[in-house]
Image (cartoon, rainbow, N blue to C red; front, side, top):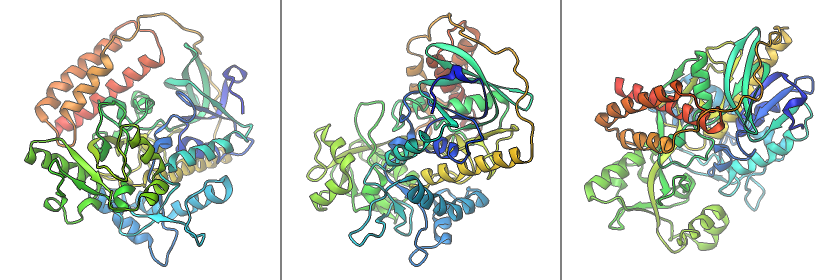
Length: 493
């Protein structure tokens, strides 16, 4: 693996993002294919790395079935899912899970008899989620990164942001920010794996990378963006003043935790017969409705009735995370409230992860494969990242095997452009306040319309000014662009 961008300027494949989709996609190419993978910050900073619950897959056809997983996914998604994409996910996903286990060293928890320990989460009719304690994503990222580092054909460049992508003959010119400088590389194919848009909200479970960069870049290229307003608000984030909220995994409810209101009473029976194991959108809306009924935003997750040693073994990360806030989950109620968590919409793709722009692919959270419909079923996200990043790579390999021409035009590469004004102070905070106020769980349509005007003024200011092209400027431009698309969609409904 080589981290020096100056060694080479032309690649077969550019992969933007180093989460599960980016890394698993890169590993599908053999040594004859040159791959450049960009990590905007450190290589392990991604939504994938924070995924707690696990990977949903039908690995036991005696006690589960593909049809049941498909049905659970469709119900959670409000029947708005693309059935072909769901069928592909559910039928092909188990092979990818076995591949990362058997060939890439990924470990999942096992029972004393050696069989996989599967948990239950909201919306699932069977225990089918394989997991590594409560840090499944980190385990996948850790093991996939180790595999990437074994492959000399993959360059992984950390602290490197993609600023823009432009079409050239048989490929793309990519303008990249690294070490405060802008330069260009060229590629025949590009896979965007840039994650979600959580950082456009005041409160989110997403890390600092999630500013919608890939969505903006695809949008600027003319790719179709679909259902960007399909945003999932997770019902059980630890209720704190932190911008990046600490997630209390769905699997805690799967292991028996119950929700309580400000009176320390259970309340889900008022809203849904599935109680705490209803899909995420249902539970989040129920909490908001209950808050209006009680006049309080104080809500709790209670799992104190379970064995303390089991909880410490099963949820070591959540246990330690709660202790940092002075809460012992084995004895205390965990304060929770919904916050932004996941994006179901994104760059429209087909089942091969192809966008509407030739040679441009998207996989993972930035893509809209149609798998999730209006609401993602718990633990389908890592599975989607595996399946569709692999399919993207397979389609690229088919094109290369058919002797599609490689990039052969290298117009006007930029190099070391600096200078310009810094990003205006407070602009990220302003964007986050607009989204939090107008479009959170239950929309405020008046605030949506006024917020859209504010966002459009921000975009005019950004595009009309002489700002330095930095990672921060790129992020603010992406945030404002995503906010504009989201609020425009909501305003049209």
